[in-house]
Length: 218
Length: 205
Image 1 (cartoon, each protein chain N blue to C red):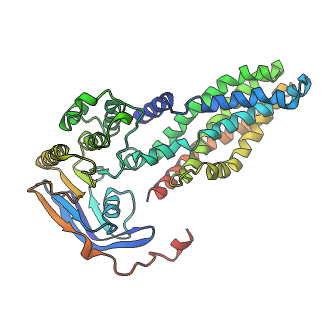
Image 2: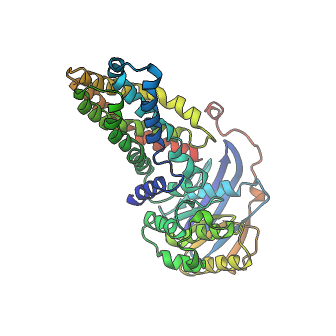
Image 3: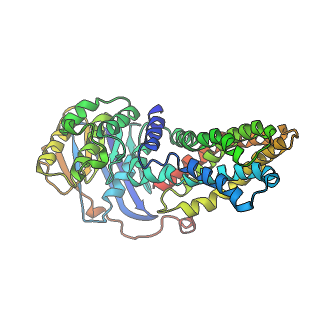
């Protein structure tokens, strides 16, 4: 099982692996937003949690079509499906690898990029916690979307359309926790909801993803 | 008996392609599938590998005894040849990577990125995976594509060694490998008569 994770991480790090794609996109969004809305520090302060969360979510979306498509193209997915590895474990490992290469770097980069958006000092902890809790859900839901579009050539558009509505609850509670934190309010409730969503998706979606991959391989 | 098919019907895209197949595969035997393009050899192999369910009938085999090699080799071009094989070895439970590379004369290419290998070298790497997988039933779909005469001989030797160790193989190929243990199985007589949808719902799914 560890072999799949190590291989996926190694592939992501090598040339053309797509590591840093999400991070670069996140950086671009956060750097460009102040130029777009104008030099108003007070406004930046208000929109910072929402922009940071939205940027992270879209950056996650960007690399999703690579989760299964590459393995399907070169035939690895067929071979992995016949290997002594449960499909549920495979999709979970794929989601974990996606989070480690996309979600985790976003979480770690967010506090630095938050400076550019003038996030109030109280907002850093809730932003970091909410992203750390929420991005695993984005990877797991995204892996489900990638599983649905496994056989589809250039399925990126379809994947985005399928996944976006599923991302809405995570975005609402994640951004809400970050916003309430930035405004100095209590943020335990949205954080608890976010944690609930993440736990629920991690517990249930791998089974759905595995079933969908099996059907798509027929 | 390693694998047997009982009244097996296989379908592709909801349409039945082969019907009423019966055969058994004993240790040390190889079955060579013959039939024109589109006759369902790949579909049959995928069904036998467990990648898709049979339309009717059943496939009997002990779990985790089969390894499949299709048209695509499942090679990651960003990894070296050795890393590719090591990965499959780890997945299938630790086959000897160096022995498998030696069997296909890949030693000199071990540290070359797989993306830089030629089509024939990639295919040899893909076939070396079968040795690493250490499973008794090989299901091979056109294994000799892009292999030269010498590599084809290496492949035939590998199959022979596998059969001698009590393994078995089913392959779709049109090349005569010179295997004494092989019987030819023509799938053409089993072509499905009515190309009908297997169930009413299928059209809506």
